Each structure stands twice: as C-alpha cells, then as structure tokens.
Length: 165
Image (cartoon, rainbow, N blue to C red; front, side):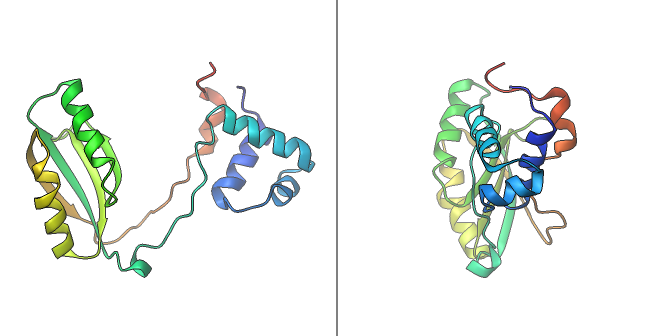
C-alpha cells in the first residue's frame, strides 16, 4: 500500500483523537466522507492502523507506581523467550514487554501497579517465578516528561511498508 498525503493527514487526525467521527476527519483532511472512510478501511486492512484504544489516566485509577524492569534470562533460545513472553502477556500489570539489546538484560517491562507493596507482590509472586529468569533490576518512574503513543508521521511516506509489500 502506498501512503499519500491524505493518508498521513488521516493518520495524524486519528492519533490526535481516535474518537473522531468519519465526518469530522473528512472535514479536517479535505475529503468527502465516503473516500475518507474507504481510506481508513484500507489503512486498517493493510495493518497500518492496528487498533483503536482509549488511554486511561493511571493516577485517577489509583495506579500510582510505574516501574521499568530489566530481566535477564538463563538461556537465549527461541523456546525460552517464547515461554517468557507467553506468561507476561497475560499479566495485566504489564503494559510493554521488549526483547532488548545493549543492556545487561534480555527484556524490559513497563509495569503499572497501585503502590510499592503491590509491586513487591508482583515481582516476587509472578516475575521471579518464571522459569529462566535469573536477574531482575527495577527502576521507578518519578515523572513522565513525554507520555504519548503518537508515531512521527513525518517519516511515514518515505519508507512505509505493510504486510502486503
């Protein structure tokens, strides 16, 4: 799928406010509603738009502690990594799980919980009990200076690819 200027405008509008109606988006990007809707559907079908979600404020829900956890594994095998990822995928406390390089760790998790006591329970009763975990290092977020899910669309038109390529 080739992404053009209208597609980029549509994507920018959806990133800014995913609850916008097709009518609102079409007016803001300069298309009539039918072509706008068709383009959104094509972007979804091509996998450019993965999902639409609501972002909640953790603090207003009593989730006051965010931790970044670096995890070291005993073996670097596809089976070990798959086992770990399948387990943490089911933990609602985990918002992000990255297999990483450049650190003395194999994974970085972003975890949100109410407080330090809940974090301790999560760490001791869940993470450290996963087969293969041999090291854990935790850092705690003091302030979120940037907190966005928006992607830098200024690069998207140049090297954009989809599963249909």
